[in-house]
Image (cartoon, rainbow, N blue to C red; front, side, top):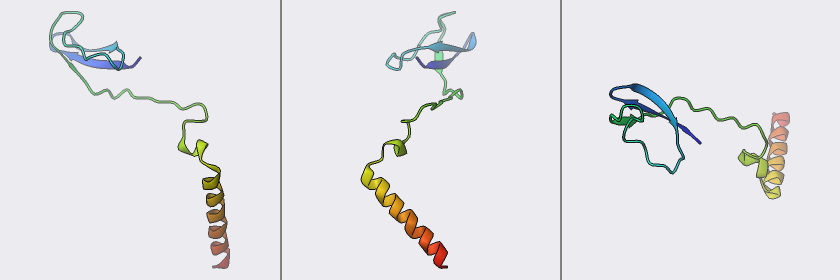
Length: 80
């Protein structure tokens, strides 16, 4: 579940975990005052396993064309 930051006009800034589909809070859980959801700077995403990148699931025809282009580029460098 993601963590969202809110600013209460009375209490200050606080964090809470909510489902993505949950509506934003309108009242502070501590004092009941109005709150505003902040844009969080605490964004850290770690991709520790293969399969998260587009290049991991390229088609065989794409891989063959990429190899051919690489060979052509190497040949052009050697010729110059």
